[in-house]
Image (cartoon, rainbow, N blue to C red):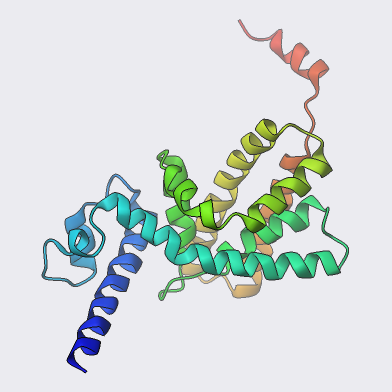
Amino acid sequence: MTRAIKKSRGDIKRMALIEKSEALFAEHGIHNVSLRMIIEAAGSSDRNAVGYYFGSKNELLKEIYAHRAATIEQRRQQLLARVEEAGLGNEIMALLFVGYWPVFELKNRSGRHSHAGFLLSLQREGIEWVRANVEEMLTATGNVLEGRMLAALKVSREDLRWRTQIIQLMVLDGIQQIDQKVKKGLGKREANSLFFEILTMAAAMMESRQDDGLIEKLGEFID
């Protein structure tokens, strides 16, 4: 019985470190958050709590991602099945919806999109290895979405991934902007409408084609 209680308390402390650090990383960025800030936010008196439960800050980053990734992947599979049933499996907007809605509907205890902010911080600060490390086991839906987009857009894989990186920055930052508006009183329906507006712009960017003639003319204005 005692052993079970100790394990339960340990799990609670571990989860507090994950959730509080995710919120801090979302707000301040990865490199601007110290272990001391995380421990204080989690209400721990153990100065080595992160080292004890995770080993290092890098391992904590992976745990935060893994903590959410399985839930997001499961939700993406559900949405992909419904999109396919509706005959929208090759629509770029629908594929982006499958990819990003699970991130948008995921909120922390304070109602904020801290995981979206965490992902944004990872990408902005060039720490994408965290995602690559965890997604080795969680690539089922990602591979399907990428394959569908390649077929629909008829672009190279390199080009698609470049576009995806740019769009991801826009979508994740847009979600953070929605949070700011919600703090000022924006309702749920309006927040959802803004999210779909962001997705509409993302789809347009994904499907855009370069106008070489126009670019050539604009290039004449460059010294």
